[in-house]
Image (tube, helix red, strand yellow):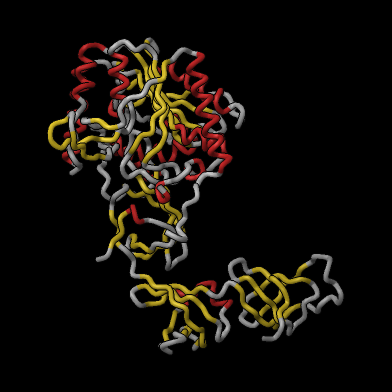
Length: 328
Length: 190
């Protein structure tokens, strides 16, 4: 087609920058003897999380009888855990992953994820290793201040002025109103919705100003695939890394209990049904692997594109993607 | 009733909020990795000009505002309304003080303006970016002073007051930027 915009959205400088960053990541893990692996992009099961939507496609041919629906992975987490359960030891993967409906200044529906797992690590050990990696990869490009570690409660108390674990739904609503956050049409007003609203408006923008800020110990209701530590209140051993207000990584002390994992998947599928979202098959292979025994481990997923954005000083993901969605 | 999904949100889209028409100034997709997706928007009230922030759940729909921008020629002010004419159809329409707001001080007869109609009624008027207006009142000019950089106020034929260089005289024609309210240069009779 004549006159159509076929050129890259990224500059050649940023395309080269990405290659250098990938090389640094691989060198980091080679030095620490973490094994690079590849797992399938297409899977018969999908993530059940109602906030993450998978793309799917159809396979026809030998191997699977009839026409089989296959889902593009949104993260390589499930098959990597199956490798861990079969004794792989520490592993990492650089994967292109796919998420339906996600497009914006920081989002492209396909993007690059660095995911790694460390048997014997807890959330604190892994946060430290994430900090080491980010410092090592970015040191040549940007100057970063001292790394900060804040619990989810400390972050909310500091930037939203509220105790996220004990405040009632009414108190959370009043807090949002106090900060001038207008009601959001169609939002299900549960605790977590209010916490998310306060997070994106008041907390996230303040995190990691010129440095790494880790948020850890999430509400148990936002555990996702993390272990829950019993206490008052129960807390999820989950962490997130922010730099300059942008989410860079999300990690867990991984849930190893197959029964509890099945219950969480089932709960998410029920929520999908309630919200009129499509049903997806839960990953029985993962559940079987957990039942056979996952080594105690921590794992993390880190957005490579956002790391490249930081190194490049880019304001939009398009500046570091060869061809963003509209030119794909 | 027409509506837009948040997926269609972009700069310049006109939507209804709390009964008023708004223009989307900025749209940002926000999605924590493990959380709900939102669109955070900055929107400008087309009646008051005030900009506010709103958050929408991604995928929700919002009512579209029936808003049209039309190029029209300013004719005259009859004390109550400012009258504009469509240059092709010669159709005339009157805009009230609320629609004009601050912009009335830039309106010169025969200039082409953008008139914003909501459900057929003018709600705002945007004058040309640059207008040429005559100075009706200012302190006497300082001859030859084109370099010292000093300024003084000057009243223009439409009533607008702008800061001008010291050498400007009453009766001079000035080119002014209506967006910033700043003097650009002297102008020649057209």
